[in-house]
Amino acid sequence: MFEVVDRRSQILEAALEEFASKGYKGATIKSIAAAAGLQSPALIYHYFPDKEALFDEVLESHVPVVQAIADPGALMGLPPEEVLPGIGRAYLAFDQPNTQALRLIIAEALRRPEVAETFFRGGPGRVLGFLKAYMERQVELGRLRPHDTRSSARAFVGMVMPQVLGKVLFSSLMDDGLTDEEHLQNVVAVFLEGLRPEG
Amino acid sequence: MFEVVDRRSQILEAALEEFASKGYKGATIKSIAAAAGLQSPALIYHYFPDKEALFDEVLESHVPVVQAIADPGALMGLPPEEVLPGIGRAYLAFDQPNTQALRLIIAEALRRPEVAETFFRGGPGRVLGFLKAYMERQVELGRLRPHDTRSSARAFVGMVMPQVLGKVLFSSLMDDGLTDEEHLQNVVAVFLEGLRPEG
DNA sequence: CCTACTTGATTGATCGTTCAATAAACAGTG
DNA sequence: CACTGTTTATTGAACGATCAATCAAGTAGG
Image 1 (tube, chains in turn red, purple, yellow, orange):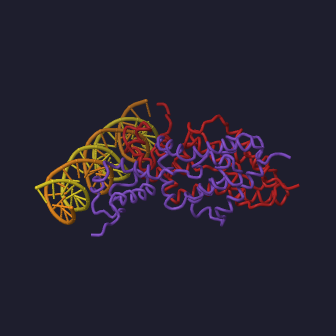
Image 2 (tube, chains in turn purple, blue, yellow, cyan; image 1 turned 90 degrees about the vertical axis):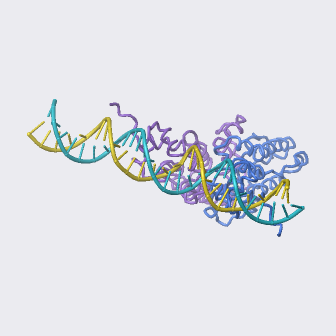
Image 3 (cartoon, protein in one colour; image 1 turned 120 degrees about the horizontal axis):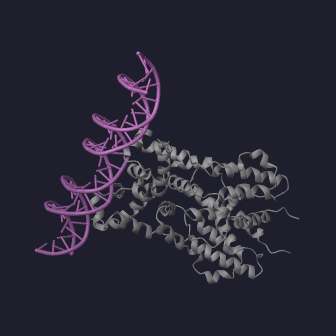
């Protein structure tokens, strides 16, 4: 016999689709089984203890790890003209199936504090923390003017968000032809010009 | 008998709470009835045809109307130092029970395209549209340097978003003491400085 | 007596989950 | 290789719980 895709990951994949498009309650064991091409929902219980455990595993395997700041120390000295576009691109790289995972996470973060916390600490929180420290360092180095770095860290992350949300939430509604790279370029320019040291 | 709050709005209020915290599927007719203090879930069907109709009415009555740009014509000539903080404050004014409504809308927008569309056209879409036109006008007036206004409109809206999302999604996680007004002030300063005409 | 409001009981459908039975893959023995 | 015992994979049927929705009956005010 052909070694087909192994059943376990087959179920996980189908579960991601179902959870992302219908939510935890909306997706049923039956619909997941059907999406996975199983003849019986019971098979899911051979591989996973229950629906909740299946959900947790789907979630865990897709919490985005932000690789753009994998080595914070090395980035600290680099000029913002290099660092900021890298971080921006990491956010804008949300495409299928990352979009699915993001939808899933957002939806469940709204009503599960622990999901929100895990997600925040794994992604946005770390980036914000790094950016704040990085900005402070750049101010010390005289590359940026003194300012509230709590605020500027948020501001930079936020500037790329509408572009990301446009893809995840309002796919067609916001399409005016502005590409990710164009937007990123404009945004970095405005941000750096706005924080340029005086004189 | 005292004319207590009328039953209908009593149910609507409870439904908002339930839908926002548990989602459409998670909130049950029974739990809504309990939250509204009804003795029987059947009473809901006296005031609303079915669950879907109840949900639609809850949603309709809470789609945020952005009053900050109620009169676009009048704002067009005003300088950005006045206009931008006003728009920013409108976004940051999300508090209870607006937060609940926003959570509800985001959650359902993820899996109901028509909800996403209604929401977008009623809120973010109009603001983005206005901002784009407004930015173009300010460039014409020489108050801002020439640039891609599709991008800057998104950027400004985005800059305040992390602060809003912090309240809605990660209430405690992001609290570092930065107030809304401080953030808004910093953000507007960076944005305007970044787009200041040369010379 | 009429109308609007409120209730408990009930319906059929669907949920997550369990289970006993079957089929397939595997391991060891001769 | 063949035979046998054992574990793993898969299935259909079934269980109790809960869901949205219905209904007939009851209450109160005008």
